[in-house]
Image (cartoon, rainbow, N blue to C red; front, side, top):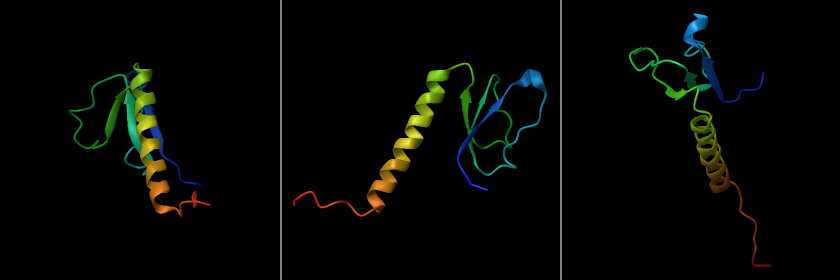
Length: 80
């Protein structure tokens, strides 16, 4: 199975357990409640009701990954 980064969505009212840390591909949790006090969850937290915050997080992660790929790949010779 392909591995890809995920953001877990968690609503307290559903009373479901977290998927993180059992899924190592989860890079953040977007939730509607404060999980800072839950010490076993050492992961980036986002506000599920703030879509711009989630979009900014995704954009930042994609830009970092793209920059790392660019630095490690052979750059084309543009001097020709």
